[in-house]
Amino acid sequence: MIALNDINAGYGKFQVLFRVSMAADDKEITVIVGPNGSGKSTLLRTIFGLTSIYSGEVIFKNINITSKKPHEIAKLGIAYLPQLENVFLNLTVKENILLATYIHEGETMDIEEA
Image (cartoon, rainbow, N blue to C red; front, top):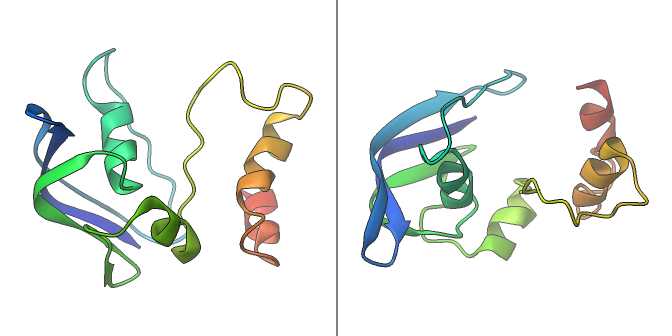
């Protein structure tokens, strides 16, 4: 399970997220939808520890990951694969996602089922 509780976050002095709260349970599909510039990517980058969190908390599997570094968050099982055109072009979408699970050997079955 992952939960965001009253998150205020952004880039330096430029705040992008204002009091965002949400939760997603295990084996639940959650969709984040919004127009360009609405903060979707910033939300994902915040979960992965790539933006400044001014206040609020991010909880993953009952662990507060708000102040953890991206590599610490990855070890807990969260991967971030941004939409870029220069991802590994010779790999399929599935192979690119499975590559992100490499640090969690034996957990690819859940990804393949999804």
